[in-house]
Length: 173
Image (cartoon, rainbow, N blue to C red; front, side, top):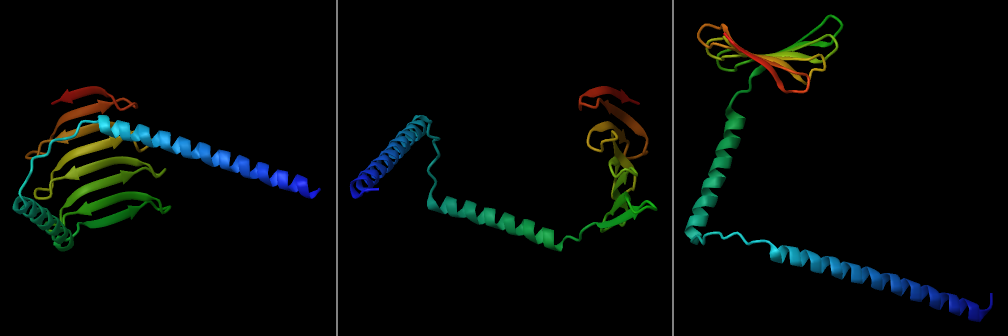
């Protein structure tokens, strides 16, 4: 190539590059103005003006609540978990026991395929079952929920569900 053709090629390259940069800047400016118009048109929430002492007190209370929750998490003993497997090693039950009373509070039962079959929930003080949730074979969709009387342990309500999650039937005993 001759020297003149190289210079013309460089000039055209610079011209195209500057044109692209200019178009990008225009696009950026148009987007920015649309965003500022949207934020300008939104109503501003009126917040009551609080004195600094009120704000400090609210902040102090919020911090104390967070500290209390964290201390409770650290000091409250966790419930004991027991896992029981089928002979082939797949999970059969997960039993959860109350850390204070030692009584079972929850039992998850699994099928041999590994999907969730049911969850039984128990009163931690009396040991009565108060709720039983059964699942379809997929282990995700609820098939029925049984509710039990906390004093007698007898089933007083059963709710049946369709595979799509809608209520099929509700029986009260």
